[in-house]
Image 1 (cartoon, helix red, strand yellow):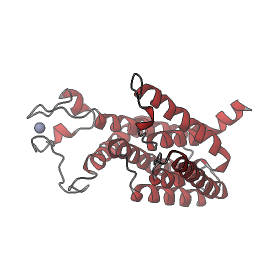
Image 2: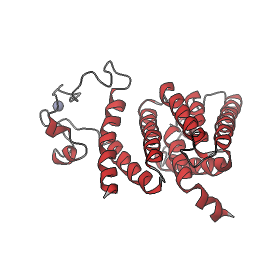
Image 3: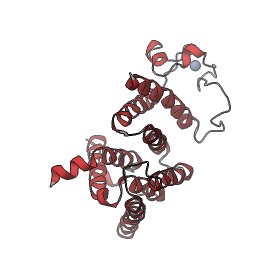
Image 4: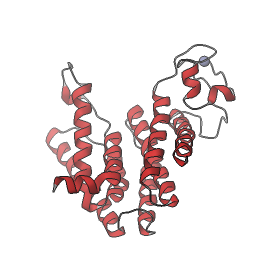
Length: 251
Ligand SMILES: [Zn+2]
């Protein structure tokens, strides 16, 4: 029963996230305008047209007025959020941990989606995310020790910064943004120094799979800029939930 509640709550959060993502970099703010609208014809969505996921399916992914396509990106954000809310609910040992995991997952989803769209990771998300994780681990809400968190954040971010500095030195171009390094503060804190290697391994494998698929049949591999945010985020979230199992599996 509570998993159904978690799923519905995740969907509602997801629709809030997609509003954040769609309005990032525009003149609109999260609360203004209050109602969602079609970017093509400015048609204000009615309550029935604004139900997460369901409205998208009923309207077959098109605006009810001008029939412009609604990007599949937005229902995917809602689905991801629903999936994370359920997954976090099955893993969290307390309600407080679940709520904190929802906040962490939310920041990861919004930051990843913005990174995919604009290749930027906003400071407000990465810094506040790092603060949330460190405070929660200090308060004993997360199952990662505070010292582990602190070292994970520091060493994780430093390692990523060193790799990007080295890359820049050798290739003379920016391979990785500073946003990724800041994001690493949050994600390294989440996994802790102990599971940092598992986390970085998972993130690299996911990014590599993405590269292989997205550059298939295309020349000029070195010109492709990869948004690392989504891979770092999913690697860290998987590691937080399954790091112990993965570690004992490797041993
Ligand atoms: Zn429209």
